[in-house]
Image 1 (cartoon, rainbow, N blue to C red):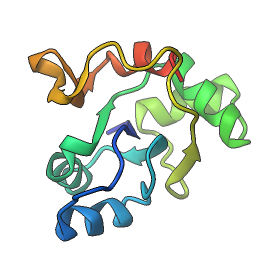
Image 2: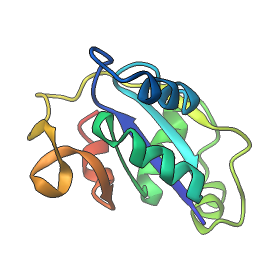
Image 3: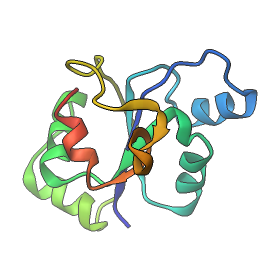
Image 4: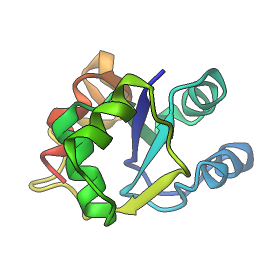
Length: 133
């Protein structure tokens, strides 16, 4: 199992109502909000539906500890490792508000990550993006 870290990188101007509703269900209602979600097929499907407005991936131990400390939750090593291994699940979806990235995004937010842009599935590269926020 594990967890997925998703960060919304675009605003809501000109957004389709179905996409807006999906983002509201994920509780990522504004730009630069980040959420920690369980890795299951329903969440993956929702992320793929709204992929043009956010980026996501699987966080490392250091990124997850930094996320928990920003959220005001306990960030001890045993707790973080248990969540990453899937032994312990999240009690609730954790959402935090971030500031815009330092010096902006390096690539275009209008293209997918695999095509040289910023949005979509990053996999392990979400850890490098997390350093910019």
